Length: 143
Image 1 (cartoon, rainbow, N blue to C red):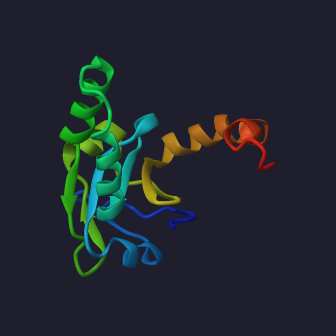
Image 2: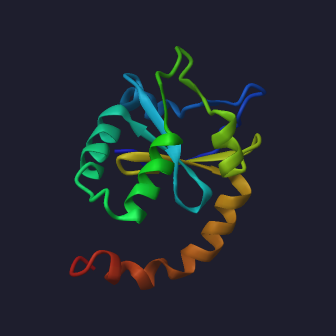
């Protein structure tokens, strides 16, 4: 489980140093994809494989499914973090998420999200006031 918010910086080569507490869960390999809200999603290889299995069950006769699968898989990059816990964020994904140097790495349970710092702060400004109100809709019967 990945938890917390971290603010590393991208180096001049577009590499991200993963937070130390996340490295063990990612040591065997990761997949980096486009995410929602102009973020990136970093998947442990096993989680990505499980998600891909679920996507294979979707009907490819549905144009929305085909479109999602094309964008999702064509934007995916697999790699193994180096000995310093760094991964390379390809230029196409940096452009998609608007990443420069200041980034935020967010633990999101079984995945990790990578955001531009300004975009993340704007997102939180809008999302946090609604957090308590949406809890009953998102997790009915728990709260």
